[in-house]
Image (cartoon, rainbow, N blue to C red; front, side, top):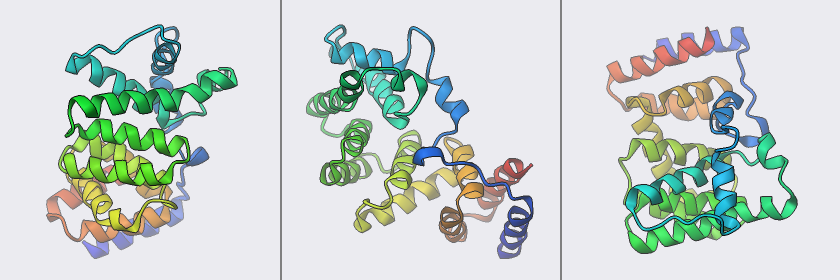
Length: 226
């Protein structure tokens, strides 16, 4: 395995296949555009809530759908649709998602995804203490949920400069979960190619997972290189 990693590192250096992390956003522009369906997008639905044009109700499925809208909206606040909003509208998105996340948590104190959305909304508003506290609670309440881990890894990487050192082990756990699974593995592979520091972190974690799963992850990396 170390030799394979060394060969892969050389291939990366020769290919120059570094992806743009534009404005610190984890997803690629193509993925971001997939969230923006004209006339019926996640930001539009969040804005409707902010303008009191919509309501979330109490059904678990409905609440989860609106939390997903918030997660997608907060993921990239620099897409054209959001940039086209006026300042008051843009400024309303994160507080609206924060209020939604708090309601979801009040209804279900073990809702790991709601804690993630609360962390993301806090990050968007520059509230570092709430960001770290909420991220810690998401780790605690949903340690093995791969789909939530995929969101958390992106947020923690984007916010690495202010993420509490005490959360590093949880972040590593999420990464190890994703490189062994199926949800989010392509995003991890892309980041592996693009980010040298992240590559070093993942390389260390690859030594701790079963060889066949490490090899499967590396096959995804090789596809990213082309």
